[in-house]
Length: 518
Picture 1 (cartoon, rainbow, N blue to C red):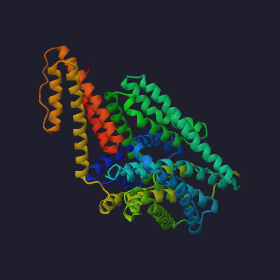
Picture 2 (picture 1 turned 180 degrees about the vertical axis):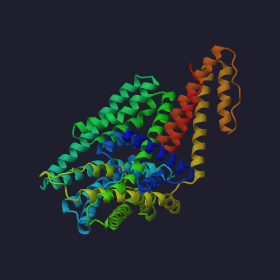
Picture 3 (picture 1 turned 180 degrees about the horizontal axis):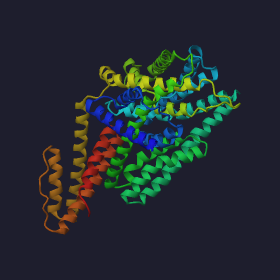
Picture 4 (picture 1 turned 135 degrees about the vertical axis):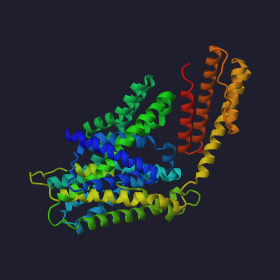
């Protein structure tokens, strides 16, 4: 009962803080971490101990899947080269730099120092996505940061497993073994994720029950994760691949009513899980600090140094890669490099990895340095979420990279006009075919023309009989389908952003769902 009460208290606290963050226009992850820290420092507050599987199995899959479904495959194709470089090169360089610095500055054994390096080597997709929602970044910049955080898992996980093997067994690991593990984790996870996505797509195409569709959508990330982990591959990679593939084909798998319901349910789930998990990060740190052995009092300065080297190294890698995001000039940009560097925060994934470090070595003795690794990991996560999270929006504003609200509004209005004209062209074809009563076509036409003139649609909801109402609904559905196809064409032709496409698709879904039964 105490565990249930703690969870409910966390949900209430996290929901209240996250709601306040939205009202005050403050990044919710940063405020949630600070709130967790404040609660944990209250005298008499109970110590919080989180089981590794709680974050890895319960929290991560749906949040990773939601992040992957938001990823724009169209924009990903334009930045796959820098994403690949970052997912391999920067992860390896970060692990080496953090490991070397930790071995020099902390009392950690060399093997545990490199376990810490592997844990902190990659950015976190949950934190990156949560912080990025508030920013009006150009599509390529946003996709680069998000894709890097999603696809660098396999590299960091291989490094982590190799480092833990060395630390626990006090042995050595060969490059051939590491390469084999990478192929197994990344390749096996990708294959299982693709298989799960294919099976789910096949089932959802044959399902029209909203409740069943919702259950399938919620179970899918957990299924992909458990299957991959059971096969000793990367559950995270499986969830990401499944999410990307399902996100790409989501509009073809269900109708408007079900899409709206799925969006609403998933929004609630993501909101609750994000709110709770970021609060846990803040709550966990004081508990871990109390368990540190004597002689670890310099951990705040050590964590600050580790966070600094991660940021400095990221800047050095991002500066040359920023040229790939400016195809017009092809020159590196400090503004682009600084924004991408600052947007790459650590978060839930490093904490889950650190908590999974074994308690004892192969000999049965306690693993030396594990408490300090947990504290330094959590401290670096807290530093990046609070410092980078709170200052990211002002940095983006000063960099000049943020899309102006007028630009976004103009793009939406132009796209809305374009799909309305596509609907009018379809109505002209129906008029020529003479298969639909003229008064039905004219009623639909008046609505589309009102949108082009940006005035309220005429209130002519009365109809002359059930047959006319049925004909009107069918024509509206046809027009909405044509508008949806035109919207996807505009997106494929790079004339609108992924954000605009999602917004207008939701508007079309609301319109179609409002028609009711046939």
